[in-house]
Amino acid sequence: MAIEIPRKSSRSIGARKAKDGVRELIIHILLIPAALVFLLPFLWMLSTSLKPDAQLYSYPPVWIPNPLQWENYPKSVAFVPFFIYLKNTLIIALTSMVGVVASSSMAAYSLARIHWPGRHILFLLTIATLMLPFQVTLIPVFLVFKNLGWVGDFRPLIIPQFFGYAYYIFLLRQFFSSIPMELSEAAYIDGASEWTIFWSIILPLAKPALATVAVFQFIRSWTDYLNPLIYLNDQKLYTLQLGLQQYSSQYGREWGLLMAAAVLITLPPIIIFFLTQRTFVQGVTLTGIKG
Amino acid sequence: MAQRTDTQALPAARPRRKWSPRARRDTISGVLFALPWIIGLLVFWIYPILASFYYSFNDFNAIQNPKWVGLDNYTNLFKDPEFLISAYNTFYFAILSIPLAIITAFALALLLNMKFRGRFIYRTVYFLPTLVPSVALSLVWIYLFNPATGVVNLPFDWLGIQGPCWNACATWSRPTMVLLALWLVGGQVVLYLAGLQDVPQELYDAAAVDGANIFQKFRSVTLPMMTPVIFFHLITSVIGAFQFFDIPYIMTGGTGQPSNTLLFYSIYMYKNAFAYFKMGYASAMAWLLFLTILVITLAIFRSARHWVYYGGVDLT
Image (cartoon, rainbow over all chains, first blue to last red; front, side, top):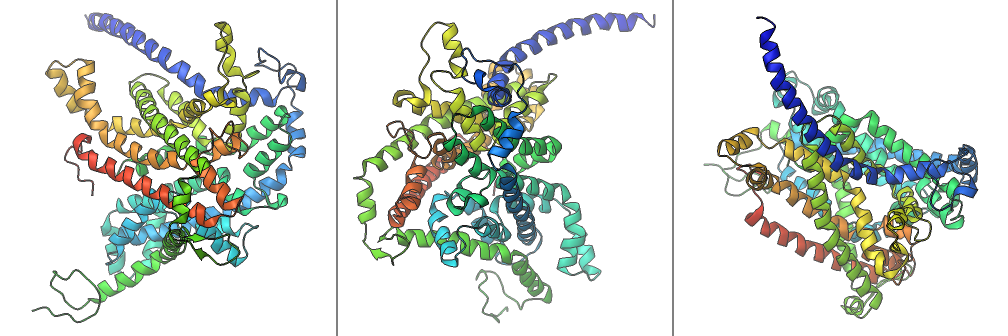
């Protein structure tokens, strides 16, 4: 008797499973081609980066190089002055990260947790900057840095980050607003200063959001192309993006070496994404929809 | 009776009393905490907006002082064939790529929203290209889309027909760029997916009770509930499309060739500013673009009441 009940239902479960199986199969049939299309640039980049010169232009193309030309990597790193560009990129990305997290979290704190008369207007202006095309501010900002004599070094790429970035202020404000106000009130009654509340209560609670901003900014600096293009003109100060592009216009046919370098500059954002996937996706959706 | 005791500009209608120590303290710390950003707003946003507006009425090469020329920059723009083609290319790109991106992202998100194993892997795969630096992506595309040896022509070979010449010739270059932009749709897929997961199950249950089939459920539950996400995507992608720069710039080596078909608005503006040092002319381009985006965005906002469903959620 005790066995009969599971048996009876197991048949309907089996039927449902079969139906689910067919449904899943159809979904996969639809999704796999799309996934392959999305992966194509990665596969091709990787495959080419391991090709000996003779197979670069063979048609139909070779997918799995034979032999695997691992030497492309050390050769590419030496040919493109990779480590100089890497150092430049890291200096810019890491200092920008510190600056933007500090300044944006302070502004977000002011907007989310302090009641002062100007905060609504400031918030509206913050959102407005997100709607502004970059072209409108590009030239005057360039001229400001030109007059300061900063064009040609890293300062135009780093210093602005110490004055906040609207997208992150918005993201952090959303997060700070979700922390109960009672926490601040209790600390205030105990005599804590606003800075103490910010530093010792709110920031520790906001670590995931701060990490998201740090990650976003690192990737933003890492992948930035336009600003280095405008502000850097000494080859020794190039970032990886600018250096690789410059290199490709000189040695456009060295696809094996180019693709090896492309793989190397693509890996860090992807590794960071996999390490921080949950906060990352939350960050994308938090700023995207929750108004 | 409350009296005005200070000169602070607060809403006049509200009864006024002297600032409490708490209110004073809050105002001071509010401003101090926001100070870096307030300075940033003034220096990197508000001043530049006003300055580029002023430059747009001047002949200005960044070395000599600006020389006032009135509306000349604007009238010259409309006589400049390169400007006109860059505006055309950009509109062409926006009009085709935005609807395609909305449809693609929405469709992929709908599929990913079904319960099945491995959906998480697909979501990651679709998102990955958005993380690739545009230099790396552009270089791979140049190689992949090579009309003679590119991998994307393989399927055409299998069918025994001549593949398109992609970004190498004027007939195909614009559509190719529209197609390439679809690779970067992953961020939107994540947004649509989050939106779909927020649709209350009760609505589907209620529709099922009413005997709705899958298409009717989509038509009367999913689609209306997703209109705010579509609205958001539409607004941001209009701004994004008009700023399209990195990929066409790198893929064409900054030339916008073939036959200027990939000369996008921002590339031509960049050339004017930083190659020809026509800062006033480029500023006029920037402002014209700004006004265009503003008009389009406002039109979308105004249309929103007819098609965006807020479900009683207060968006303000």
